[in-house]
Length: 222
Image 1 (cartoon, rainbow, N blue to C red):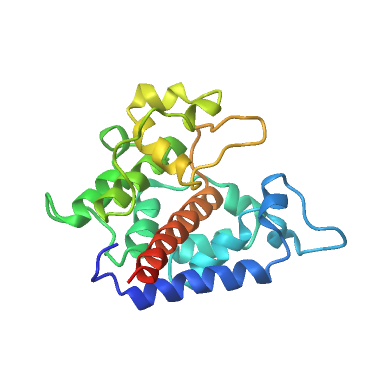
Image 2 (image 1 turned 90 degrees about the vertical axis):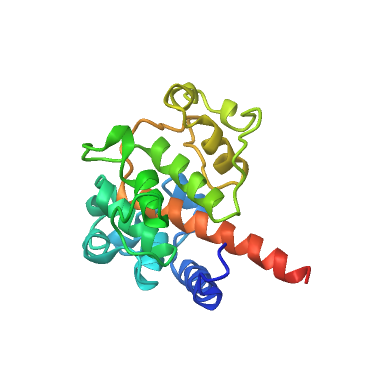
């Protein structure tokens, strides 16, 4: 993480995420399987598995009007996110302004890794591209390796070869190894599928928490 990233601000963000997640009656493991806890009866919009991370990001100033509107219904969180919207999520999460910026600058690369899939022109963002982009941004900020290794984590999923064909396998291996990129109960990643707003919130929340976790370890060794 950059030393100039407003460390206190990021700590506040992660604390906010943790507190809000604890306050929502949908548990993480149950949410992945589409369940809620025994005896719990959350409101319909809060029953969505991604409601907690989406609400946490929104309360931390990430997401904007689109995410706020998406929280009002299950359908909203299931809608595909646009490249520009995804760029705005990630840019604000790291303290940058959305948009392309000057060639070669930090905003330029943030845009390239979030909104420029296949050279631009797409109306949606694939899950594989989004995960690979976060890995590259994490490498840019110094907390995710750029090697990828032997793809031992990706190979556990039946549809991992799509990532290899697109050139996303190495970065996505890093995300899977870190526990940020997870699959579906049927053993797939569905990397070619459009990223939904709910998935975007969960992916970005996990990425930020991993970043802060590593920063905490570094501070503990000082």
